[in-house]
Each structure stands twice: as structure tokens, then as C-alpha cells.
Length: 238
Image (cartoon, rainbow, N blue to C red; front, side, top):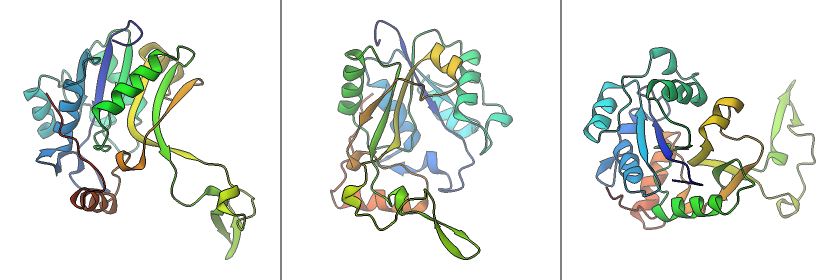
């Protein structure tokens, strides 16, 4: 429960990953990414229900073994690379009869989040009723947008129209969504069609727990950093 309302954890996964083939069923620390997310949700006292939505029979079968599968496979129209998460979740709300309360979206591709992170997020959210939703972020460590360039007729043009030579220390600190947690009231999601409505609370996580898997480079870096002990991998309960 959060703010006196039940919490439904939604884990969306699909079979057709291009960046990392078979991504959601890849093994990390002795279990698949999907199983790791399911166990993570199952061990969280605040989560009242967990539902996995997928188009993939193998992942559906895995979810069924934990008793968290959606009533049926996701329709093909919601399993393409262009289908939005909002569309998937709205379909699931109707399909699985998700009651009013809070939705907690867990993406399996941010596997280094910890139980303590979730506890901190929910505690901060409970104590800040002025916020309508919450999302996890981390400091953006890549190229600052002010440094980015476009090419027009072979000429470099500032992407934001800013002076690229300005010292990074003088540029504002930026944050990026790390995909670990999205928390929002079900009815607000349906009305706003967004996990980031006005009044979304930022939950800042450190980089060592914010790895987000999109490419094979991400996957290889993750495994290398875990192997050398720089990034901790928490064993899920449940």
C-alpha cells in the first residue's frame, strides 16, 4: 500500500528486442532478467499485486510459474517496436482488471536497483503528498546537450544554438530517466497518458545502480563492472 491505496506492479516485456537479442531472458547472477524482476517485486511488502504483460510464450510461461502472468498473451499490435508503454499498460488495466490505486512500473532492463532503493522511493513519496507521481533518475554523465552538433550542408551547427566551448562546470547538471521505477496513480495515468505528469517527483539514484540495458555494449559493460566489483548485484528474495 502507498498513501492508503493498493500498489500493482507491472512488468512489461516483449520478445522482439533488436539491441540485445533475447534480452529479457538473458541470465544475470544465475537467473533471467525477467525472473529477477518478478522476484524483486514479490519480496516488496508494499506491492499488493504483480502482473507481467508479454507477447512471448516463453516469458508468459515463466510468469505463470510465479502466478503473475496477465490473463493472456499481449496482442501483436501491442508487441511492436513502436507500441507505447502507455498503450500496453492501458490494455493491461482493462485485461487484468487492475483496481484503482498506484501502478509501479518495473523495467527488467535496470537490474541493479535494490530493495533499499524501492523503500527510499516509497518513503519519500509517502512524505511528499504534493507530488502526483515519481520516477527514478540518475545524473547524466554523457555529452552535455550544449555540446551536441547537427550537420547541415556539411557544416556543424549547434543542436541547441549554444556555445559549445563553454566549460562543462558552468553548464547545469542534467538528469536522465534510468528506468528503475515509475510510480503513478492508475487514474492519473489513464487521464494524462503519461508516466511523467506535471508534479512528478524525482528520485535520484547513483550511477552504480542505474545501468539501463539497451545495447550489447550496455550488456557487456554491466557484466564487466559486476565482475570487477564496481557495481553490486543484489540477490532478490521471494
